Length: 191
Image 1 (cartoon, rainbow, N blue to C red):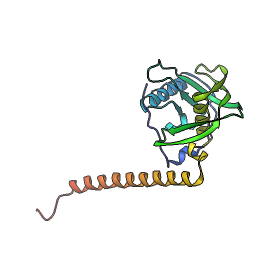
Image 2: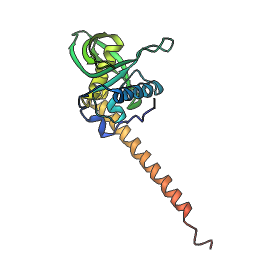
Image 3: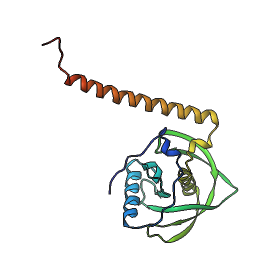
Image 4: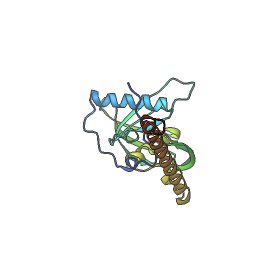
């Protein structure tokens, strides 16, 4: 298994709509295992394939607490069949929007149809944290981020903050590259 790089806001790939998985074979199961390892290492409770720059409809999740045994779950081509009218407020975060958390209201329960790690058709009725995680991750497959559920002002602030940070990081990377190139060029005044 391998830890994959997680793409972060403002990367435009996060807004792509993911395409269905045609076959759950050994190669795809390896991707699912790598996604699970990546999610655990981050650490997180859910991860969509698009977050590791793969626009396929796949999600991994594990909502086990720190003191509990891991309970990895794999959802391929997940589809929400039903959500409850009852809503639940949960403080959400996202591995693609690091260190930013906000209260989001979503349906308290959801029924989801999906293929499991072996490609078998399954259905689950989730509630609580699992319902929130599934809705959050399925949103990713549609190019929707949890900040899209916030007010326009909050969303714009977050996007601006992460865009500035990405620009600064790009400038720092360019500056360090320029500095290295400068070091390699002999100083003519010293000759």
